Image 1: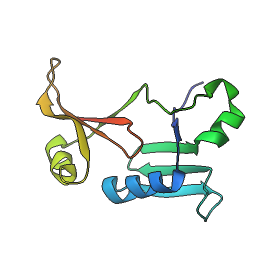
Image 2: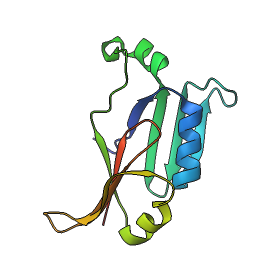
Image 3: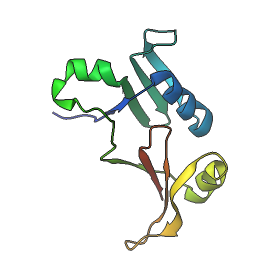
Length: 126
């Protein structure tokens, strides 16, 4: 039966994406392929209970040709729940570009959203 789901996100540059997620969000690299170098094809990062994978555009398209597109245009958001949205907001407010400022949603949650270095939107909610 199903156990987990982990997103694999297409990116232009895996190394730059690792740097963003480590420096801005406190993620830790678990694995990269190759392990070192400028031209990384793939990486797995982790923070707390969250695991995310990033794969370089050409490499991912070689695996799944139906993903071919000249431009990477995000068509999803990552929804991340935290136990203190205000602390996370304060930790990030000078480090990221916001897609949506901290607000109360129509369903009663405190949330904000920001862009990663690939223009993906990450929503933080409590």
